[in-house]
Each structure stands twice: as C-alpha cells, then as structure tokens.
Image (cartoon, rainbow, N blue to C red; front, side):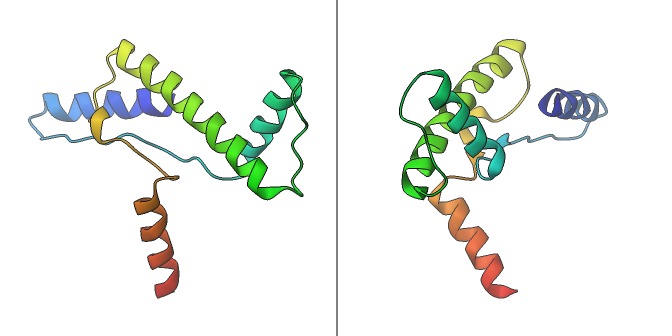
Length: 107
C-alpha cells in the first residue's frame, strides 16, 4: 500500500508540472524479517532457527528479504508503479549500512 500511495502522489505532482524522481527502497532489518525467516524455516521443515545463533538467523533473514524484495519489485513493475527501479536501495547494502553507522557516530 505504501508504494502505491507514493506512486499516486508522485503522479499527481508530475501532472502539476513538478519533476519527480522516486527511488524505491526496502527496510530489511529488524524483528519482523527475522520472525518471518524463522516461520518459513518451520514451514519448509528445515532446521529450526534460533535467535541464539545470530549468524545463521541473519543469513536466513537476508535470504528471506531478498526473496520478498524480488517478488514485490516484480509486482510493482507489473502494476506500473513509477520509480527508478534500477537505483532501488535496501538497508542490507554495505553503503547504506556504512552511512547509517556514520550518522550514529556523529551522535
């Protein structure tokens, strides 16, 4: 829903003569993606993921996030959502994480 609303606003602004450049992005960190990774592992009958094994859990969460991003991006492009899809970002990109750490360091 969020990207559809952004598309609606961007198209409205473009029709009013404004230049619009929307770069879509995904937040790939946090408890929701980790919970989803554990749920998928349980559904697929694979080894259970435990928060006490952070590296295994993070790898599973990253794989789950990449799968979700690919599926969502495909749907958004099919729906005709206006955006710079080739420039999209996600919070797992090293450059994004480095910038985030830089901001935290300044605090």
